[in-house]
Length: 299
Ligand code: HEM
Image (cartoon, rainbow, N blue to C red; front, side, top):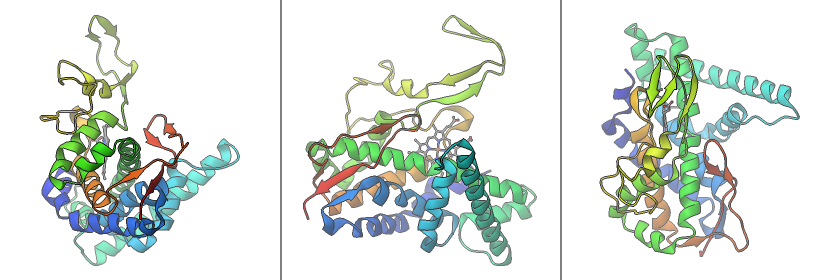
């Protein structure tokens, strides 16, 4: 039901507005010659895209980022404080979705919320399901793109040869696929086995909780020539970074556009950049990203 709302054609229509977002982030630090890439680009850029996709006001970006962080990684002195912070932000976000959906009921617009209201009118969704969908998109579609951008730029900052490749917009499509194959920001998925099964001689009884490491597919020599080499011209590139099977990523077309636009606009404006001297990149576990990635460039 939601696939058509995320089709390549629909997502391509957002490209110009996504490029505007990338440029408005870059405008804020381009003359400074340095940035905290995570705070100033990798986080606000996908969050802004999310607001545009849903049809929510971009002026609320800072407040939205605060609520999103309180839901995904709440601060607080202890677990109770963190849970309270998460619940408070969760309620604020739900209210925001509630109000925006009610507005679309009164007046249609060309945005995802209006489409959800349309599905409600046909009896395909309830209001609670629409809100859950918005929530799912927030949880699935922001930090995955942020983490991929952080890992990609941490890698590119150490590879001037690849920065030069990115200067050619024609090279960006295959490079995005290879960076996705290489980085795999969400490498493992939790599953419960629904039937007794034997995999490679190992019996796994029904009900067992397993972790499926789909990232390993990306480095399988039976599937990729020279899988441990980063080849930004690799083609074909049938990686499993967006998952496999029925739960495969709903937002893959949008993610690809976001990554391609970010690489294109960044390299058009900042063709050469590096890590500061003596700076060590710290990768985050679970959902792969980089903590406060610092970049420097000539102005
Ligand atoms: C580079 C960015 C992204 C990566 C690496 C990524 C990766 C994934 C993976 C691996 C799954 C499968 C999870 C599973 O099997 O349990 C998934 C599911 C999903 N993704 Fe993404 N994702 C990205 C961006 C996005 C974006 C931008 C959106 C939407 C705005 C999105 C929405 C979803 C949704 C809704 C699901 C659940 C699909 C289902 O359960 O049927 N993702 N994603």
